[in-house]
Amino acid sequence: MAWKKNASGGAQYYYKPKKSTSKTIQKDWLKEHGYKQGHFPPEFFENIEKNLTPGRLGYWAYAIDGDGCVSLTRGTQVDVRIPLNDPEPVQQLSDIYGSSISLTEYPEENWAPTYTTRLTGERGLHFLRLICPYMTEKRKKATQYINMIDPNYHPPKISMNFRQNSELLNPHMGMVGGFFDTEGSVGMRIQKVKYKTKKFGDRFCTSLREWVTFTNTDLRPLRKIKKILETWPFNFKPSIYINKNKNINKVGKPNKIKYILQIPKPQHLLFMKMFSPWILITRKREYADKFEHKKQIYKLYDENK
Image (cartoon, rainbow, N blue to C red; front, side, top):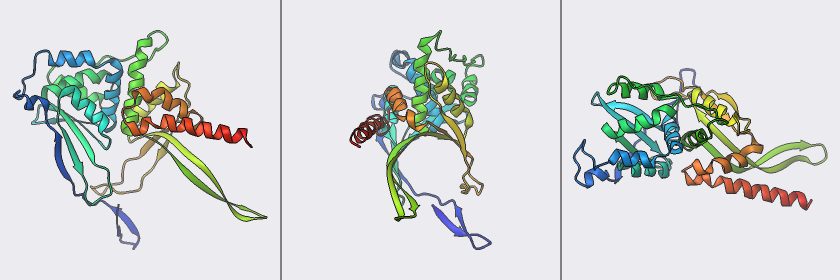
């Protein structure tokens, strides 16, 4: 984070370009096996559709809604890109479509490296058609790009009537998992709270602070996740609040307002256990066991008071 003095002599944040180095750590499977651009093995896309279950389609729709990028290259070529600090989701998508993976590192910053895979051309278009019905934030843009090839395409609406259609649970749980992998945060750390007493003066209370949150600058996917978590058979009570950031972005304008969806503390363990099968990032998925361990420690403490 960079700061400089403004006109009044105070410190003001400003954007500082970050130097980075990139390299390919996994080559494109099709190129390695001699396929030219636009040419694919027999039944290439049919096999992908057989392996991508509705639950995984929901996952990828909200993973792209979260940290993905949907754009056009050369004016008409669909380009779907997802860069993440954790390699597991990137690796899985690359394995599905045979795309390459690049690694970007920041030698002058204490930042984690970024793993990126891209689906371009027919692969990107095929992927968008599969996930578009489950998307929210980038649904309109995805539809516009698909309509450039197929003007009659209209993504169907996916119902949330889980009582009558139990098969709809999996894609919606996948949507929560995909957004949690890309825009979610889970953690636990020791917290010290200082308080005053008349007899002993300053005292400190130590406890474990934990959190499970989703953060995004677009409110729509957060509202959708909130609705899913509040709909039968789920019984979560999430809340959404605003976090205003006064920092300046690279074009000199204030950063966008961030919206945070928060899972209440008593439901952290339930959330992590329920959605762990839909979370690909290992370090996040492991918090189900950590919260369970914390619960057991607190239970033993209460029994031995």
